[in-house]
Length: 443
Image (tube, rainbow, N blue to C red):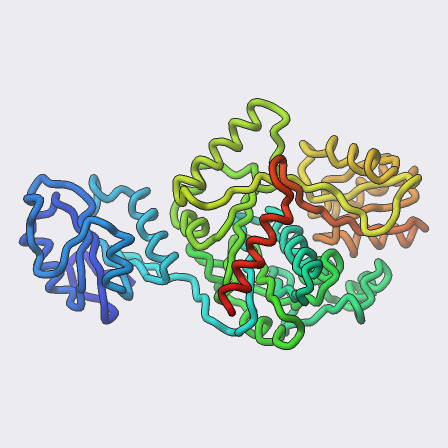
């Protein structure tokens, strides 16, 4: 809870750093600092209407916010500035920097704390976080896990989802029936058979721990989650943790390296809104997913999106990626009905890949995998000529798509989506950099 308009303190932490401007009279600012107590430094961010450039406030003053965080190690930053010097965009930019450095922020009537990221394990870890649902983070988590496995590591995924289990659950592909029939039996037992940890285990071929969460705050902290118990459950299952987020929630666990996943459909202004810059600042690389430069307009949109990301952190690597379908069983020569959560705008590319790269004939496509009634209608209307239902392991992929296939005598093939760079060096090069960063920090 923030300080009220009457200037009363709301129990500040031991060390405060204040943000000030020259549009407030120095006597007023100095009185506010004295009233707060515990102020170790002030950062002046502009303005000069009422104050000289060299005014004194009784505490050290700097004009470098990042340097102030490093030098004075505050527990919380407090706003003593406002419009026109401290705009809303500027406020959230500075708050994002503070939160990314583990420092809380407080203003009149509001406050926010950094999302909890405690060190829970000595295992090296890589977090895969995102800015939105359906960004492709599960596919990229699986990509990192497969690459780590190729390099001799034993990765384990800890997934967090809205439909996760009530207690952390381990799915080991070596000992769990992940066939369509096995997953359908799980669904009929009342369990979520297409939860992220099951998809991760199936597509990456590594043990995966499932957890649940409900809600997430403005800084990404889940309102409710059993994720910490999931991380502890993963102890002893491998030697590299993949910490997978849900939606825009951030795993409440420290990570040695972080990949931020951003769908190409994102509004570039997203990275100037509220605390979204914080996600860039805690990341070591950004993957823009579902990126296609097939047209000038698309290329311009990607350029604008990348420009906003690098405005927040000019040094962060930005990878433009696209997903290609990867059926987990052969489909050559089959007549395929495809179910997907991908938007219809990408249908031509999906169909072309399944036909040219995998040798199938696609007879129909449903983009309603996340809308059960529409998916059922699409299957009834369009799947009669198919002998294989190809589906992602998401949403209604088991309880509707797989059930329909098994009841009508069709084969079910689950489909992964594997990321490739639009251009440039192989994606493995960038995955290696994340793996190396994570393992180096734990040596």
